[in-house]
Every structure is written in C-alpha cells, then in structure tokens.
Length: 569
Image (tube, rainbow, N blue to C red):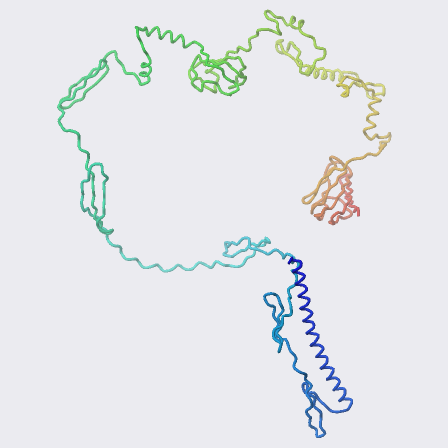
C-alpha cells in the first residue's frame, strides 16, 4: 500500500471513530433530555392540580393531609452502560471500556502526518567563560553580551600548621669485600653483596697483557744515509743521539718532494738554463678560453695566474668596466680577483680598432665619405647628423633629426617672440599648424576659421557679457555616503550626485570663490540621518525613507553659504 493510500485509510478510520464517539454522546444527551421532559411534565401536572409535592433526588413525594410526605415512585431509569475508561493502544486504536459490555475498539485515531512545524528560534549558547581578577565568573553568550555571574573564588585560607619532623633515616656504610683479578681484556666489575644501608663491594679488575719478551738493552746506535751526520752514537748508559744534515744538504717540504717525484732525468740537465726559460715563459699570454662579461664576475675563480687570458664572448659590464664581444681579458697578477678590475686585470680592446669607414679603407676623409653616401629624401627622428661641437674644441658629435627639429621649433619660438606684436587679429590673419590628419604636414589656418571653430565648442559671451547659449554637463558621482563628513567641492563640476547609505554629515563647501552647486541625493535601504554643518542658512529637511530623492541647492557668495533641500516625492 502506498503512503497516500495508507494516509487515506488512516483518515477514514479516524472519521469513523469520531462518528461513533459522537453517536454515544448524542444518545446520552437524548436520554438526559427524556428524563428532563418527564420530570417537567410531572411537575406541570402536579402544579396544575394544586397538589403539594417535592423531589427527593429522582423520587417524587406528595404532601398528605396529615402533613407528612408520602413516598412516591422513583423515576430514576435503568442504569445505563457508562464508559469507565478510554485509552489509545500502541497501534493508535481508541479502546473504550463500557460497563456491562467490556472493551470496545472505537477505531483508528491516528491521522495523516501533518506539515512540518515552523523552525524554532536559535538558542543562546555560552561562547566563553573566564574568571576575572576579582574572582568573578564572567560568561560570554552568542548574543555578544557578557554576564557577571558572581564571585566564585573565595578568599585565601590561613596557612596550616607545620607537620611534625620525620624519623631519622638509617645510617649507611660502604666497605670493600674482595678484589679479584680478571682475565686480560675483560671489563672491570663492581657488585654490592651487602644491603642498601650497609654496602659491601666486591671488585674485579682485569690484568694487563703479557709482554712478548724480556731482556736488557746495553747499547743504542744510529746509522744514517749520506747527507746526514750523527753525533754521540752509540749510547751505552745515558746520553742523546743527535742527527743533523751534512754540509751542502737541506730539508724540503712534502710538496717539494711531490714535485721532485715528477722529474725524470736521463741525462745531465742545466737547471740555471731551465730557470731562465721558465722566467721567459711566465711573461707569455696564455689563452684559457672564452668568458661571458654578462656573468657579472671575472673568470678564474680567484686562482687565475698572471698571463692567463680569456676572449670575451658576450657583452657586459663588471666592476664598472664595459666589455664587448671580441675583447681580450688578461690577468696581470697571480690569483687575480673575481670582482676587482684594478691591479688584477687588463682589457685589450680589440673591438675598437677602426678597420674601415662606411666601406672605405686606408686614408679616409669625412668629405669623401659624405660625397659617396646614398642620399635620403625624408629623414626620420632616429637619423643622426654629424656636427662639429664648438663648445668642445670642435670635437666630432652627432645630433638626431628629432633633436634638430626640436631646436628649430625652439628657435622658431624665439623668432616669433622677436617679431612685431599685433593686439587684435583680423579674420584674414593666418597661423601655422601641423595637420595631424595629413601626417602632420605644415598647413595654415585663418583667424576667421579659428573663431568659427571656437564658437562651435564653447559658450560665447555677448557684447554685454551675457551668455548667448545654454550648456550641458554630466553630474559628478560622489558615491555612497554612510559615515563621516561629506564636503562637496565645485572642482570637477558644479553638478553632483550622491547616495545616502547611512548617518553622515553634509558640510558647507570650503573651496574659495563664489559659486552655486546642485547635489541630487538618493536614499538607499540603509539611509541614515543627514546632519548639516557649517552653512550660514539651511531650509528643507531630509528623510531616511528608502528610495526618496532630493535636490540640494547650495550657494556660496561673499563667504556666506545657503543649502536649500527640496524633496522630489
């Protein structure tokens, strides 16, 4: 059975149960009404017959002529079957217990599941608890409000009485029990065979190794190879044997010994001649390879020897010295520095040698080079022209075409400045200009055309100083103002707009001069009270209703400021 069908069955059973319960109630009401009707009818009959009577419970009594009450019939009906209990069992059935009948299943009472209830409000939890310096317990709740629960730390108690002294400890003694000799090479041992308070130590010590032989030395002598001399040898009782180099011999170091080991001589050699040749070789430049000046350090790793050289493979600057590919770097001292040029290196600048000039070799003159050069009709800014610098002893210099044009332009300004002034130009006067729409070609424009162009761009004043046309402007967006002070300024434009996003202060503008400003205000959903400050006079008020708009007209004349607030709704 589906959930929907089961719910419908439960609802039907509940309806039947309610109907049965209503039936029982209606029956009880009907019986009560019948009893009341009978009682009323009897009372009316007796009253109409003028018979004295009274009711005792459900029994009718009539007054006898002798003044006594005669017991009449008991009008109580047969005892009905009452419901003595009603329970709902574990299967949600209503079980009625009826007198004289027993238990009756009145039907299934559980209805279909109801809709989910509304979520309850969030509870308040304790987020922190601490005891402050006064001994108070302070609880912090999730609402952010701390609560002082009260003092939970009592005052310090008085010091307790000192305890009684402990019993004296037992006296301890240490004595040596036995000392045993252990085999050679074994570890020494210590064992306590007594008690912790009366120690008795048995010690084991290993014996030393036995010597290989024994005897008596009666004489010591030393024999040395050629080159050494021995004195006081042999020694028979006491004395010192001295060994020294013979005349013509001297000691040498381990390094010297290694060097000598590399020498193999199969015939007589003149060492003096070898020394002379070595000295000559020390002045020779020895090529070690290539070196990139872009590395930032000199080659050799600090061990380069005098005469070692490198060919520069990549341009660069090291220790302030510029190198170009093709230059030669030569060490001038042993262990040349990798960072310092002076006193360590020499630069052989092979790249600066002039081999030819613009293809011409031999004795070349500047005039011949210019005459043989290819002509260029339209120079560009990067082109260079040769000049003789009179301010530097006529040294050869160059000037770019861009700099030459700048100089001409500057000189032209001087020429114009030195010309005759004209106070009022007329329409036929002409001005030079660079036409950007025609690759900056030099063109002319008349004063009449200049005036016409200016009149199309700007508002023109009449002869009486009045504007001859209106103008438009775009309001400056000063953004949302939600706190602090907003001081508008005419800089950038006299039309402004802003959003009231929270309580803030609108201050009078303090820019110098006389002017008017218009600010369009709009209230956002978080709009707050706007406080006006510094104005000489204000009129109108702001609201804080979301969506309301206002125009604020501000005038500043002769140091006085006035703000007029006009609501737009």
